[in-house]
Length: 357
Image (cartoon, rainbow, N blue to C red; front, side, top):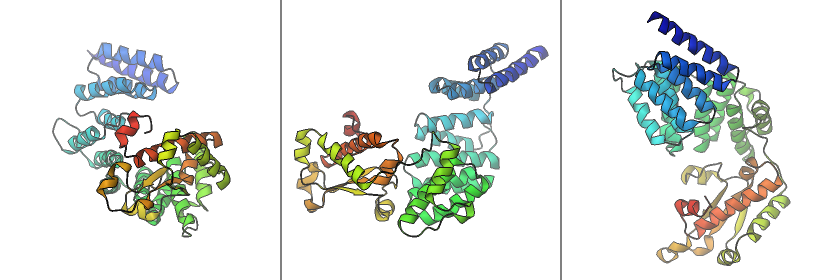
C-alpha cells in the first residue's frame, strides 16, 4: 500500500515535469499511470483537467474536474478550476454561479470556506454575473473579494473593468491605477486603464495616470501590447476619410432590397457611445454599433417620430478589433448588417440564425 502511494506521487511529479517541459502526451501518460495505481486520485484527475484545458480539450477537462471533485469533495483546486472553465470556456454562467454558492455554503463535504477561498469564489462569481450583464452584482462581489483576500492586482483590474462598463470612468481610473501599481506587468490592467484614459481624454478630463506612471491612453495601450501582443494588439488608427470609405463599401455590399428599405435612415459615425447611453441605457462603452429608433415591426404601435431613426457606428471601438483596413471594412460590414437587422425588427436570435449576430 505504501509502495502504491509512493508510486502515485512519483507519477504526479513526473507528470508535472513533463507538463512544464511542454510534453503534453507524456504528462498525460504519467497521470494515467498515477490513476492506474490510485483510481480515485483527485490530484491526478485535476492535473489531467488542467493539461487538457491548456490543450483546448475543454469538454474532456470538465469531465476530469468533475471526477476530481467526486473523488475528494474537499479538493479546492478542482472546484475552482471547474467554475472558471464553465465561465471562460463554456459560457455556463448560471451553473458557475450556483457552484460558487455551494462552495460558500459551508457544507461539511466541501472545502471549508476560509477567507482566501471566499475571495476566490467571490471573484469567480462576480465574473459570472458580469457576463450575465448584472454589473452591480459583479461590482459588489469583486469588492467583497478584495475585502476577504486583500486588494490584489487581479481584483483591481476586474473592478476597474466593471466600473468602466458602468460609465464610472473617474472611479475606474483610480482603481486601475492602484491595480497597475500593485502589478505593473498586468496587460489586462494596463489595457483597461488605456480604455478609461481614452474616454476621459475625449472629454477633456484626463491628464494621464500618474499613480501608474502612465502619461496617457496611447502609452497604456503600448505597454499592454508589449506584454501580451496577441491578446492586446495596438488599436488601428485610420483617417475619417478611410473610415467613411469603409462605411460606403459596407452599404454598397448590402442587398439592393435592404438598401431600399433603409433609404433615408442616417448612418452616423461617432468615436464612442456617449455617456448617457452607457449610464442610462446600459449600452456597453465598447459596443461597435447601435440602432436607435423604432424597429419596422413596431411602427404601428408607437407615437415616436420615425425621423429619429438612426444607426450609429463607433469608429474607435471598431478600430480596436481590427488588424488592418481590410479587416476594418469586414467588421464595419458585419456591424452595419447587424444594426440594419435591428432596424428591420430582428431580435438577437433572428440575427444569429441569419448569420448577422
